[in-house]
Length: 139
Ligand SMILES: [Zn+2]
Image (cartoon, rainbow, N blue to C red):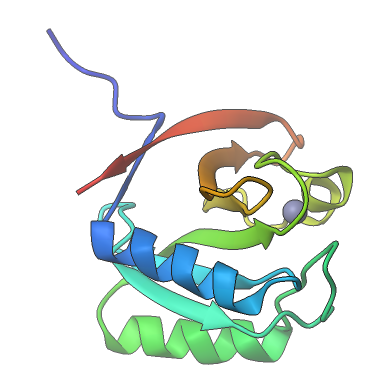
């Protein structure tokens, strides 16, 4: 039987750990960054300063985007995901997140630090602002 891999985001275990560690380190501020790889997988971790410097929202500046993109290209990879943390709320995109998300092709990863054990959830947000759950599979 053919398996449908459309709704799965494959991420390297090491990248997952790097993301969670970084988000914990930046708390109580929201942390954010980008993930790159090949074949839509998450293989490399790129932390980016939160332009909003806020515990409630995040923004990746044009400058950070360009700088990261050139490093990603030098590595022969493509952007595949964007992550940020929710220091005090659950791992679901906020109204602000959905409204401001402008990369419908990237997996949208949220790390919630609400509970003792961080929760990591993955979504896709399309051009029509429709939010779909993606299964996060560690490789
Ligand atoms: Zn958010």
